[in-house]
Amino acid sequence: MKSINYLHKTLLSLSLVLCFFACKKDVKDIEKVQEKMELKASSTAIALDENNLSKGIVTFTWEPARAQSDDHLVTYTTRLDVVGNNFGTSTAIMNYEDDGVYGRSFTSEQLQNWANEKWKIPANQTFTLEFRVVAEWEGGSTFEAPEVRTMRVNVTPIKTIVFDADKVFLAGSAILGSTRIEMPKTLENANQYAYVLNLQPGDLEIPVEYKGATNYIATADGVTALKDGTAVAIKTRENAFGWKIETAGKYRVVVNMQKATATIYSPAQDLKPASVNWILNAVATTTEVNALWTYGEPTGWAWRAGSWTQSLADPQIFVYSGPALTGRTKFGVAPTNQTYVYTGNNTATNTAVTLGISYTVYSGYSSSERDAYFSLPSGTNFMVLDLRNRTYVATKR
View 1 (tube, rainbow, N blue to C red):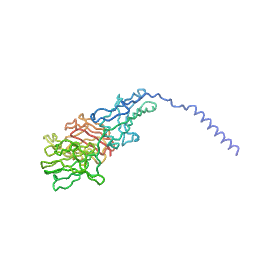
View 2: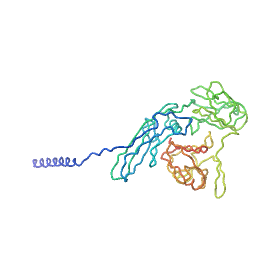
View 3: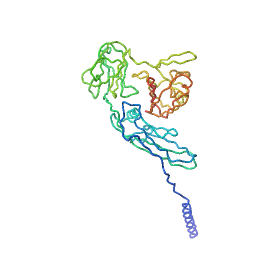
View 4: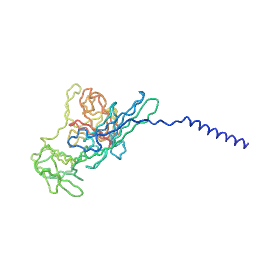
């Protein structure tokens, strides 16, 4: 019996070995494909241009990937990031490229803003961009491996003068009771401080506290006369400095520490909220825009109030900071379906939003605007809607 069992096991093992070698003859290596895509940059070293912020400073172009059968559909995806981030979902600028488009350009303004706000690169520090293009195929009877190309570009940022500050105040005899008032940072720009207050004739000082020491912001040319509504270059000094306030009233004070400027608006020159005209229930309506409502997929197709804050630096800038929004979204000046809206186009279509990209804002109350939406990506929880300059930027914080 033991001999029979042994013989049975031996024959079974032998048959398995023979099957293995028989099957192995049918296994073939995947043929190596000849990739065709080539990626180039207009320059591998650039210096951002503060005098031409909206002009393209670097352009990436690529040759089409290898040709496939008509059954295969090729798509191109691009990503831009800083070396070391590995194209993370929270840091990469991603775009799905249109059919037949083999290039992507970026402006000095985009790169400077992303460096400061998205990639958190210290002011005046050079950095290296990493750009990647991926070609992928769908459909067809065979799997086609994607083609991937990556290259790097060294970037010198726009030189900025950043004043360090723990706190910024308003003081002087122009303030009622001569009390000292702390200026808050603006939501839209952490390097900017703003405040609106009543002033009387006298001197307006802007003390700055940093590491226990107090200095004063002064005009770069030492002139104390108010240049109403005009941004003036500033510096810091140890001795007190005051702007001459001649007329009592409500003033708006804006200090941009990154641009090293200060702007003081008197009641005569103060910035005004947006004003829009629209039709509500067949009645002409005029609205001074001091609040916004949100509508679309994230709100269950209902108008939602709250989460929008009017900037102290400019009443035509609104900042959303709240629950994450995803999907088709538009913004209105009143919680009604007839309202005047702000959205991504005036063609009753959707505008796909990429986080960190600035989009042109369209507005109106016809069906062309009311049926148009921004399509927000997952995780959008911070937005800046600038009605004065008609721009919109969504980010994830």
